[in-house]
Amino acid sequence: MLFRQILETETSTYSYLLGCERTHRAVLIDPVASEIDDYVGLLQALNLKLIYTMETHVHADHITASGLLREKLGGKSVVHRDAGAMCADLLVTDGVILQVGDLEFEVRHTPGHTSGCVSYVMSDRVFTGDALLINGSGRTDFQQGDAGQLYDSIIGKLFSLPPDTLVYPGHDYQGNTVSTIKQEKAKNARLGSGQSRDEFIAIMQDLKLAYPRFIDKALPANQSCGLAVE
Ligand code: FE
Image (cartoon, rainbow, N blue to C red; front, side, top):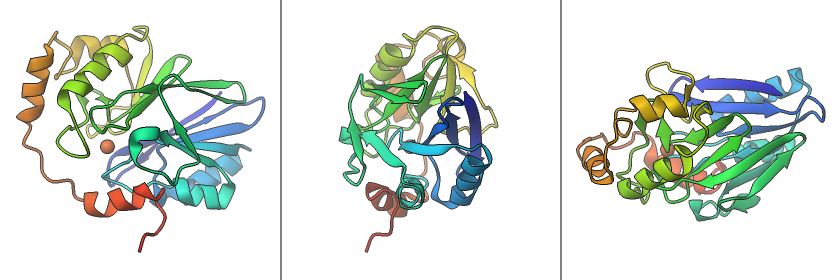
């Protein structure tokens, strides 16, 4: 398997490239529009054909490259059915398996940051988007966010994975690149010391986060796969 973790520095967003070495088929998870030339160059350099761009959710902080990649390379965009992006080619639900060459991705619906959030489980790793972050979690105060639902998603759908599963998040603001389920279960500041559902909800309600900088631009754009909206 070919694997790259790509950081977009302005919004500390991680995107991921995964490619099958046998079939040269590839996917991008959560690509950012401003970085499209890098993705195209990387796919070319590694001799890969883009099959899917897979979104973990409709993002509020950056614009997706999925629409542009579809126009340029023909890659189909994938989001959860409840994400509110009807522009996508595949609207998936919990339990769907996406097969790309020898790579197998399992969709796990992990709502709470948004109602249409998913995580993608692939072999020894999981791409958690903004559901589970390293030593944190996605915020739950906009985009149909729901702290109780996020707690249930993380405990039920992510902490139930094998302990050595690698955790690759959608963002990291401290420069961390990867964690494990074991590490997050033991050390995550919001729900890694046995916090109850109510304690987690109280923590999330008390965060007092600033209004997201790009939400008014990014949300409508991402509902049309990152392509211009009038
Ligand atoms: Fe997000």
